[in-house]
Image (cartoon, rainbow, N blue to C red; front, side):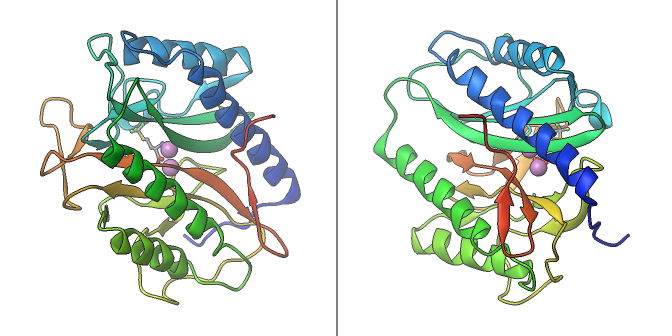
Length: 253
Ligand code: MF3
Ligand code: CO
Ligand code: CO
C-alpha cells in the first residue's frame, strides 16, 4: 500500500472530523479537576462526539473498550479510562481522541495537569509540546518524513529526555492507521517524500527516563515506561498543502 493522496473532497471531510476531535479536547478541559475519574471524562467525550454526529474511532478498535485513551503519569499511551482511576493533585496526563465523522478520521491528543505539578513534569510537557511544533515545521512538499523524526529526536535528546520508538505517528483520514509510519526519531533525509494531499499524525511520546515501554498483561493495552518515570505526548493531524502545512486538529476559537 502506498501513501494516499487525498482529494479536495476527502480533505474537507478530514478537516471537519479533525476540528471536531480538537473541539472535543477543548470541551473536556473544563471538567478536569481533582476527584474526577477518567471513566467519567471518557463518557462526557463520547456523548459530545455523538451529539456532533461522530463516533469514537477507538471504541471497538481491535477490541479497545473505550471512546478515548487517557494516560496518566508513567503511562506512555493507550491508558484505558476507568471509574477507578481518579485524578489527584500533581498528576499529568494525556487525553487522545479520534473521531469518525461522515467516514473521515481526525486524531489528536494533548497533556493536562491537575493542581500543582512538579517543575520537572512541567518541563517534560513543554519540551514535548515544542518537539511536536518542530516536527510540524518540517512538513512541506518535497521534504522527507525522516526529517520530522530527525528534528524531534535531536531537540528532545538535547534536553535530556528520550523518544519512544515503539509507537509512531501514522497516515490518517480514510482509515485510522494508514501508511506511512511517522517516526519520532529518525535519520536526516530518510523515508518517503511528502506530497500535497497527504494527511498524517505527528504524536511524539517523550520520556523522562528510558525510552522503552511495556504493555500491561491484564488489559493488553496500557503502555508504561519500563522505569516507572513519567511520559508526555501531544498529537496533531496535519495536511501537506501546496506550499507547506495545515494543522487540521485545531479547535474553533
Ligand atoms: N489515537 C491513538 C493514536 O494516536 C490510537 C489509539 S488506538 C486504541 O494512534 F485502540 F488504543 F484506542
Ligand atoms: Co494517532
Ligand atoms: Co491519537
